Image (tube, rainbow, N blue to C red):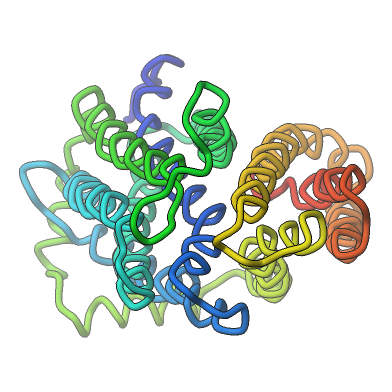
Length: 355
């Protein structure tokens, strides 16, 4: 019988999620500008960004299946937290010092893989630790850390500029030091937040039946892939239906992340030349827009609970996706103030990203 935890204990066990999501936010807001600083062409960005969807597709199910069968003195999930956080922190430190495109792209693969190694067992950790009656509170706390971390990560370069850093100062590859410093801060948050969770929240001891199951089904490559195939086969019909929706929604989200900084630079500042001050200003504006959209999406995730109960989830979901699509179209041709308004409406429309 799992015992109920206090709100402080639930917060402590989810602090690590802050570091994971801060890292994701840094990637989403800064990778396209970094690629441009290193000489990338806009047409090459989808290939350079391929690490995100591919590592999520491959790493998450494999690591999830592995952690279910892990038996160690630290528990089932904790080893993955620690390994992923250490590798992620190293990747964050290396990224802004990339000397060539191949190095930045390779580091992104490592960074995304490490984040996914940490994140998938983390979700299972909440289910392992909390009784069924507290699952919603546990995942809601994760959502809160997601919104806070991503808002802060998008805004960090601007905050550094506002407190006195020179936004035009760059390293030898032209990457602004406000971005370099943001990644260093992210490395500290990544390992620091995970260590906080590890030292404040211990995993529940495995039950006798769980130990017996792991010993009877040891971790083998074939067994891991069989577990994944069984999970796909036994997937509820609702999840299969939602999968198609998510496919197209994530297409839109990745398109936004890849091109918003360059779109703002071209439409509002009249340049995509990474050597100009205007391009660096555009990067800060895009980060501010991203911070705003994360805050709006976070707030809307709570409002959508009421609307879903009042009007039904299908109708609310359909309206949200329609608003998101129309707003994404609007971003490409509206003026400066309207760009920000369209950005807000887009992410209000996909607020369930945090729900």
